[in-house]
Length: 195
Image (tube, rainbow, N blue to C red):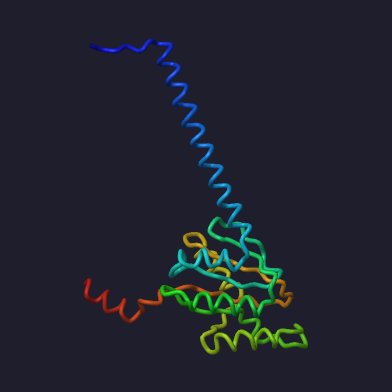
């Protein structure tokens, strides 16, 4: 025995299904918007802690002065920290060091190497903070060269920029993340084995 559903009833059922799917879609959009808003309501430290397990080699974290431009590339996330530059730099280093999967190659603007307190008051204190945290690991590069590397990376990989209230030029510190548990020497050995 076959039960037949009348045409008006079929239309009614189809309308109910469409309405249910529409509501489910709207609910999903609303939940995604809430997740974004919740992320924005977190402190910069909490946002960074949320991102760090997701970041890996080829991602970047940049700690900048106040005049660093707000970049529009989709791969770049900009956070603002009200804390002083040295505190932010220290907290970021501690967070990266606590991660089992990443470490950072450290770069700073070569222009900073030649600036003095007479030309940029406070620069010596910033240099001392960077040296204290990173010592010889911090490499100098011309600002525009670092920016080009960052632009190239951001087209494929996430970049997190943390702006600080610092108002001294050429003080940005660029952290290029790399894999903590795999190194170039072992990669070279693997490459030989694969030939």
